[in-house]
Every structure is written in structure tokens, then in C-alpha cells.
Amino acid sequence: ILDTGKRIDGRDAKTVRNIIAEAGVLPRAHGSALFTRGETQAMVVTTLGTGEDEQYIDALSGTYKETFLLHYNFPPYSVGETGRLGGTKRREIGHGKLAWRAIHPVLPPHHEFPYTIRVVSEITESNGSSSMASVCGASLSLMDAGVPLKRPTAGIAMGLILEGQRFAVLSDILGDEDHH
Image 1 (spheres, rainbow, N blue to C red):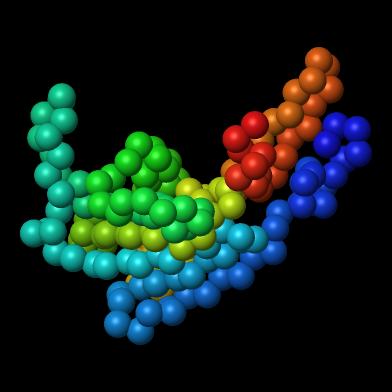
Image 2: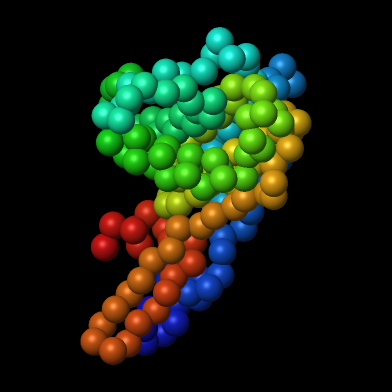
């Protein structure tokens, strides 16, 4: 990449893969979106609930209620693997929290929008940047559900190649670019 300026899929360092975004794809959900960037896809669903649906968090600093829940599911089939479905794994916890931290600041204050908000992102295929596909899909799904966001939110995964004093910053990295 440093010599040719070309990545393994032919893109230059700044080019983002083709994007297809659809909102309202599930007719019975409060909000939904299907977000695809290259070979990465997230089906994101938003459900609105009452105060009875708040999650109690038992933290070191004490117990509190959370009104925004984001679940990030990364099943083995999304990367062409077999494996057990079920228990939440390290990647799902970390990527889910990353997406939560991107979306939470743009949500309306609870006193202005007094609902519990649950967003579920199901990664249906992945070739890099799946947590950011979840952010993009969550923004669309929340707007489809009528949540008055402060602003739409999007994200891409970035990478850095460094060799001595030469470097390249990669936009929208692939899975292979993330692992090396």
C-alpha cells in the first residue's frame, strides 16, 4: 500500500466501500434498518418500551437504571464459520459498547423522550467495520422509530500502516486489514 497506493481490494486509502442503506425494512418493528457497506451488513431493530423495561445496572459505584440498551450480535455464520450460538463473547461486548458510546450522546434527554430504547444489531455478514455498520444502522433504525436524535451518526473503522517514517491511514478497513 505504501508503494502502490492500492489496497487488496483495489481501493486507495481514502475510499469507502459501496453503501446501501434501507430504513423501515421490518413492518412490525418500531424501527428497523438494513445497512450494508461492501461485504459487511447489519440488520438493526429498535424497540421502544416503558420505564418498566429499564435495565438495572449493578456497578461498583452502586445500582442505577439504564434507559438505552444496545445489543450487538456477531454470529459465526457472519464470517462463514460454524460454531455455537448463545453466550455473549468478548467481541460482542466490546463492539456493542463501542457502538453504544457512539449513539448514546445523540439521543434526546430522558425527560424529553421518556422511553426505554432497545437497539439490536444482528451482523449478517462481516468483512470489517461491523461495529460501525451497527452505528450507521442504529442511527437509521432510531430515526425510523421516531426517536428525535440530535443528529444522525455514522462511523467507519480506520487503520494505520507504518513503516519507518512512511505511513498510510486507511478508511473503512477490511477484515484482512484489521488482522495484520
